[in-house]
Length: 118
Image (cartoon, rainbow, N blue to C red; front, top):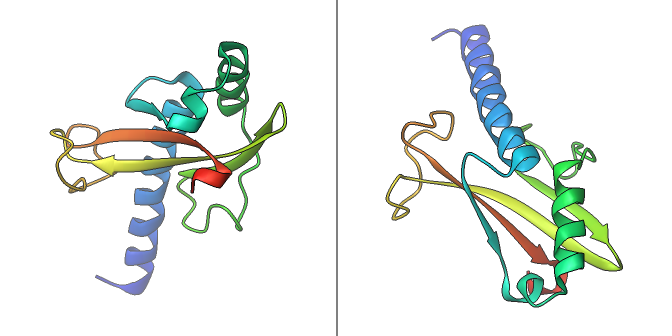
């Protein structure tokens, strides 16, 4: 494969992954949502505010998204610094997905954690 073709292929792959990740983050559908113990222990109103902030999150930049897949972010909600991370598993959740750009072979897992749990 020529270098230009490989670059285009990489960009297309990242665009497909990014689209699926954005859909999960903004709709909370198309994967699984996991809360760490620290987040789950927060008051319901705070968890609700966190999910709203996650769905409208748009602080995606080269520092937190070097591969342009929109799979990580940092946010602060009601005084709590949080991270979110999207990982890609096979359909059985046993191994890494063979192709994160293919929803037919991938289960996306979005984990929300307190920064101090990392």
